[in-house]
Length: 548
Image 1 (cartoon, rainbow, N blue to C red):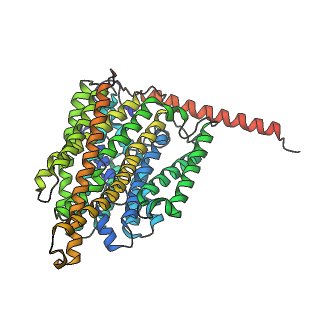
Image 2 (image 1 turned 180 degrees about the vertical axis):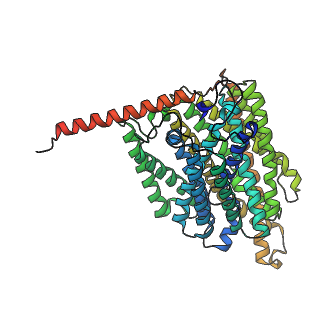
Image 3 (image 1 turned 120 degrees about the horizontal axis):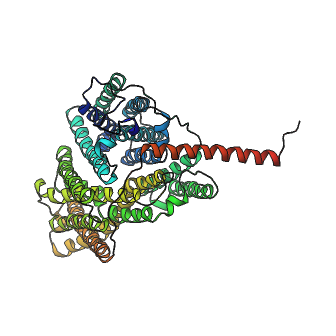
């Protein structure tokens, strides 16, 4: 932990033996983070290969992928408690073992519930291992504990790995089979376990804090709500939305989980997510911005693959090469945010306006560019700007939650809300809405284009029906995509106008508390939980005495 490091002198990690050069110790943990981040259950880039070789549907694989993110988000609320309960060595070894098992299961199973549950558990342990590494080197990254600087590092790792893992997965499947990606990661995780056993000492922190007072029932209910929410938006189009009993049941179960959690939060001393975290101004504002922003760029999930594959004729390797453009945008976006937001302390309003401006460039470029003969290199600018915009908005609003004035007891709960709204809701709600709009717009434009062809082409009866239908659908797709890009561009311009007209002089000043302070807070939480449990038990015994 951070307090194990010497308060004076150069940074050092006492869990790592001294025969490892001091300057190399932090990079050892960065290697661990990269291996862990590459391992998360299913690899969404291989979805088409998995659909072709298994009985799984595209929606099943997406659900499993988002389950991993839900597991990651749920872990935020207790990751500090787990860190103070177990040593860094134990956390890394257990997490790596679980991720190895998850990779083996995901490479073989075609049972959807098992796949989803496995990915959920893998996401939980991937987050815990990542936190164990990042918290160890936090003072090396930012000795003053400036979270704006720290989150630039976090997102350059996390978002970059998302793009690089897609590239690695597709090329692995291209040269061999998609299952080999799981075996490669299994080998790397085994190597990581070996390195941890040799290079990380089983050191304990100066204070042992048991896992008491955690609302595990609340964690299960929140995970159930998030799963049901994701199920509705992932499978909605496949089941025809509310006409299907599956969607209605998911809505009922999700609402029941949400209502029970809200009811329990009204009287529990330490609920898993409290009303204080839910009602916080910065948390609410971040949720609204995430929903608007990620809906605007949801065309990434709905249009880009369809456009590049069906209209431009790209194969899998050319499609995944587009990830390099997004990767470049992420690197530049993180560097720009570090220089301006983290170091120069530019305002939140300024950074938000820049992110929305980049999203506008992305939408406008596709609106004016989209056509039948676009070269792959011409897609660099919009994808580059999309990658930069997404990483800027994520760093800025995650930093705002640290600066929201929440006590440390509530702060991890706000991180869980932020993880769910930013990563899960942003990736499922927006694409579902855009997908439905595209479906209705396609039907309208297909009818108009078909009628126009019939009225203007006298030789229409000599054209094969399949060819005619394909031509109409292709033209309708291009016209519909351009139309939706136009409407999204208008919404983005309106959003930017609102941001520019609003006033905000707040600048980032998100300083993380000392680990000694965090330990005192957590110890106080456990002590008050014990006292509350004892008090409640005493009241019950007074009302219902045990007969002699």
